[in-house]
Length: 182
Image (cartoon, rainbow, N blue to C red; front, top):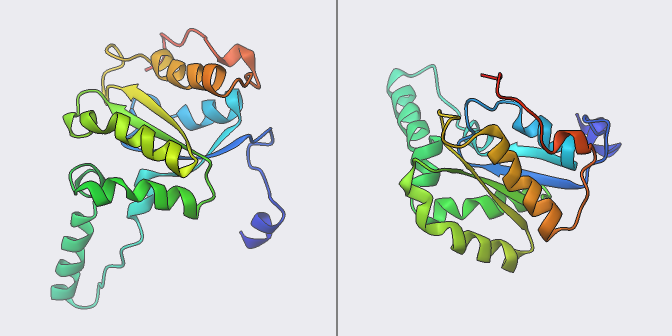
């Protein structure tokens, strides 16, 4: 792993324009969103919110300690910790993005979740002040009829085109029919 890092190995074998942190619950009906981001726009998602939760050690030798560790792990579970765990936890996104040398944050905005509804503009302002590109990607966690995969892609397409003035690496991926996908 170190050798690959030192040699700047790029697993996408394409152009990597941006390193991104994908924050928030991904739409479960669109599992290939990071692959699309990389192939269409050169956005390499190097970390997602779920990945920030897996470093809690659980002692399996002592049953009492194991229960305590599991309780603390539950406290740090994704939605509990990030969305409803207080403003400091939401702001952890900037520290994670900085530690992983990201220049971009994509924030999944589950429209059915009212927990993040009021922070959109605040997050955009913080991103600007901290020097991060920031894209709010709307979705409905489990219902692609409300927000389609194309609608999700359009959030990225518009930002990359209008705000950054970039052209897609593969224009055929900007808009395509995936209505038969499930």
